[in-house]
Length: 314
Image (tube, rainbow, N blue to C red):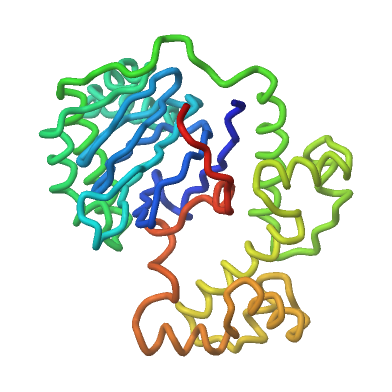
């Protein structure tokens, strides 16, 4: 099965990304991305697939997945039926971590950890419990505290006993190399310029791709059209501005590239199932964003957020 490319975006001003996943089930989502991924799975058991490794897992399960190694988890049950399947995921760039180890000798052990992780690594339940004890720092609102906690954790993991998971040399099939590169160029352009007028022909030039191929690429890797993806991107930014400022809705609409207020309200309602005003009122009343917490901890990369056909293990 060909793994899907997942685009992991980092919050502005952050060196890594933390995601607190709480779901009714963990579906089979065979995918890869350039970032290293450290995943602590809690209140869940089932099967994990890392490269050519297939094995059972049960909470607490801690695994480090290297850059571009296909992987997924697929749950079968929750030990505590009253609570959802939970995972704490940390994504970080290998190049960033290696530069840090080179510049700061105090972090030199991280280089050894990444070198050992080329096959994917599983850690002991005791080490997983160590990460569980750091959740307050990893899931806190302070990006600085999240960074410090994650770095301290990586240093301790570098000293921990590990079990290799996949055979060396397992990589993403070469046939998928071009598409992620094209998609990444287009997505980077969208994320930087979404406040402006976006034209398909301009995106095609960025990705060096035809309009038909661009549409096919988006549907294949994000599950939606370019216009739908752009709409969600603009609405997502508008949500942040509604929560963090008292600016009029019309001004925020203009900021995100939807100067027509009626069109902005229509797109916002379609994406969030409520009006911008209702969204702001909910935040002011409850002190949190409808549907989850803020950017940087609770938001999953959208490239895999869509309904999927269930795949059973054979």
